[in-house]
Image (cartoon, rainbow, N blue to C red):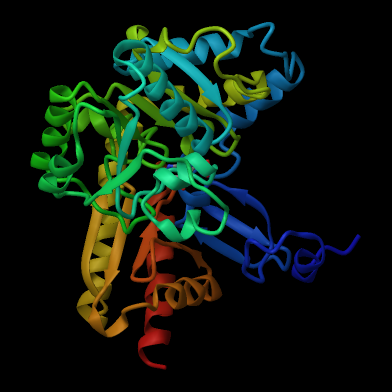
Amino acid sequence: MKVSRDLFDQVMVPNYAPAAIIPVSGKGSRVWDQNGKEYVDFAGGIAVSCLGHCHPNLVNALQTQSEKIWHLSNVMTNEPALRLASKLCAATFAEKVYFANSGAEANEAALKLARRFALDNYGAEKDQIIAFDKAFHGRTFFTVTVGGQAAYSDGFGPKPGGISHAEYNNLASLEALISDKTCAVMLEPLQGEGGVISPTQEFIKGVRALCDKHNALMIFDEVQTGVGRTGHLYAYQDLGVTPDILTTAKALGGGFPIAAMLTTTEIAKHLKIGTHGSTYGGNALACAVAEAALDTVNTKAVLDGVSQREHVIREGLNAINAKFDIFSEIRGKGLLLGAALNKKYQGRAKEFLMAAADIGVMCLIAGPNVIRFTPSLVIELEDIQLGLERFEQAVANIVNS
Ligand code: PLP
């Protein structure tokens, strides 16, 4: 069967508009398309492929588990799930884990748990959820409504209620909304999709203090920042605050779909038997791969390597900027970096992305004005150099056109 990009338009729901290229294989941070053209991968499948493509530890875990057992219902548990949960608890503040399949589902579980926790402890009045403008928490109707871009939740009928939005990095705007009726404040400890925005220390500590004051749970959505992305296993570990609930997905499976919600025993006990669930959550194959990914990422060598690589990429982008004057700022942390376009290039991030792909480097955008880089945490230095050279060529093509 001939598979070409045209087939997408024939057989796929048109909610995406993928590029013309169809990648067919990948190794480390290089990817090849149907025509054999090679790309350097600075996108990592949107912060998913934390160990690049086909990392031997993950391939081995997948192959080994695939010959043992793939799936059991929730009527039974499995060894990889319990090992992974134990390791996540050992490595974080958490004492309990709930497995899901995607970031949105982990967030859905977190929000439901927060509502149930508040109902059980304080009564039905305490049901308000506060999130932040530009936040992204997934595409289920609850999570997309909690997310900070109304356009994504408009047009689907009545929205879940009790949700309001404050301004990120503006504590006063949160203070104006929060009350004893607030059951949870959900935020990313570095906004990804919203433009790669780091929180200030004052803000993040202030959110924690306001949550404590009003007995609201602080939910960290670490779907994009988690599993080593910022140079720490989880971003909260470098922020001096501990959330009550944390969600993790994307890099957790290194490319195999899995997500988790982490919390304390005290909070977790409110999700009693039958209150929530998922057929595939805790799937043995997914958990086996995630265990291997966690074991590999959660080492000093890999985590320290993230800031070394950040440094090299920042230097490269600054050098490109010195030549072409296109960025106002390089921001973010670890290997979640955003190059914000200056005034002259506003709204043109996608053009840079397309030009880069033409030359052979995959990047991402975070809104119309930011080019985003989320490569593998173990990307080889020579791949970084080659990717930067290609990116520079793409920039030159746009600037000189
Ligand atoms: N939360 C954050 C911070 C994300 O960046 C994303 C995806 O980009 C999600 C949640 C949704 O994750 P998923 O697409 O796996 O449902």
